[in-house]
Structures are given as structure tokens and as C-alpha cells.
Length: 96
Image (cartoon, rainbow, N blue to C red; front, side, top):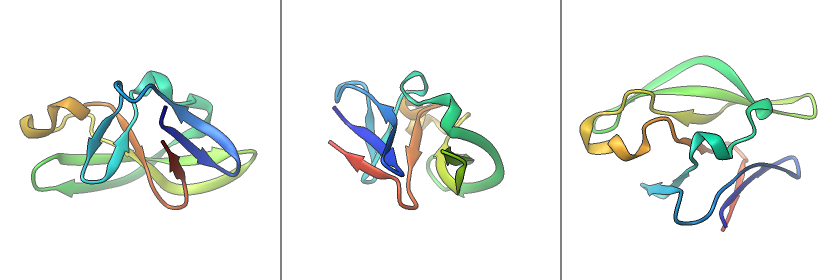
């Protein structure tokens, strides 16, 4: 069962058959991510085939990891399967 961990706290966990894996990243369904660990960010990036990504700051025990989670609220058709799913980076450990 894949888990996302930051500062020794599990912030996302989902059965392997519920996550999506794209370009080496694990995308968690939104209902499997602790909403208390996510704080909206104004940061956005654009991928040529997935579309525009929006970001969250990851917050655990008062510590902030800026822009450490991202998602595609309106992905392009080629990435429709990850609509709203959340992926992590910047020190967030993904454990399978």
C-alpha cells in the first residue's frame, strides 16, 4: 500500500490499485490524503501533455514544505486519469 510520509507522519495512504503512476510519480486519490496536511499555494506549472498543475504546501506539526504537492484540476485528455489526484516531492518519501 503506497504511503506518502513527511516528518515521520503519514500524509497519504492508498491501496496500490487506487493510485496512478505517471512519469515515476505516485498520484494519490484526493480522499486518501490528509487534508490537514495540505495548504493551498499560488504556484502553478505547465506540462505540455498533462496541462496546468496547481500546488499545495505540505504542513506537518507546524513545519511547512512549500509547493511539495501538486495536482491537475483540469488535465488534458491524455492525463484524464489523474484529475484531482495528488503527487508529492521535495523530501516527501513515497513508500510502497
